[in-house]
Length: 392
Image 1 (cartoon, helix red, strand yellow):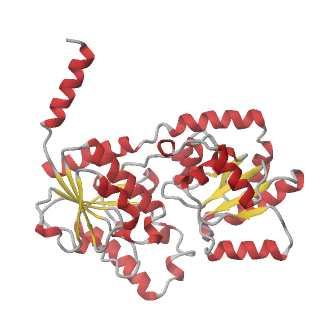
Image 2 (spheres, one colour; image 1 turned 180 degrees about the vertical axis):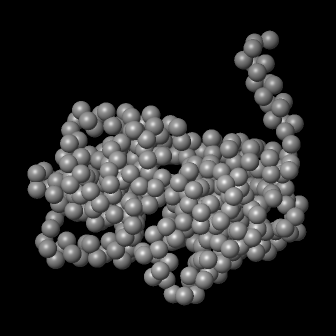
Image 3 (cartoon, one colour; image 1 turned 90 degrees about the vertical axis):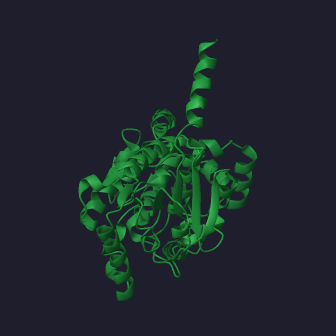
């Protein structure tokens, strides 16, 4: 018998006789635009999909109050089903997983209140930005919101649940903030599915150029306008670079209703400054086209739990100029330029330094670096932890 065929038969045999597991997953986070469409929701959807594909003989039961519109694709998977929140203890589960314990959205039940008490539980942590940068977040919140956030954190401390994090940075911060021992948390990182979902299209790009009045030379920013994101550094650096490179445009994607972005847009209009394009939300194919053709992706964030836009940019060959804060060095490595988040002169200098040769160099490094982050690896790390917890 051919050795390759024998290996395939053996692999299928072992897969068939794998121990079957039933995993419960709270997916309330996929019911809401604020979390479902952004990083947490995208992480949750990609994570569950990768786990489902890695373990086709496991059953994954999603628990939600309403139909999880931002995770609809998961229900097409053969080993994924949907049940109502509150019925968790009616099912024979081996483990219960919580992708988002900290949400303060209205009608969002803290999942730990629903978790079966007799089985292992894991909680995924994406960041603790409200506590790491309190001056921008928790210190400005109403007292009730502050109490609710801290209560959710106290629930974690008291639960002895095992924490999964999207970076070593988040792991360090959550251990400190939740006062848990280091052995009770592990970084599983994140993956990129950009290239799986992207086929370059000149037509899409030409349509974008016409709709947005976009030229051939632009830098790109993807993300919110919150203070910690460093959007002011992006705009100041672009204005400085534009004085040397007059045709350089700045493209800022994301919600057109973002109050910070609206304020920046009005200021630029009042000053009669042209060349900054606020796109609003774009489809993934449109966004990926913008990534792939930008002079550079600029991301001077003060804090990111992981930094998906940086990974997306690298996977599409866009030169990355990023801050050196929090988890971003873990993602970028030596494949991009890392600077202090408030170093406007440095960002300006690096934007202007990207010529055809440097763009090609950073593009190749970024693509190679991005290969290190896959959802299959995340799923493998996750399921190993789950098996260990189930057997303990």
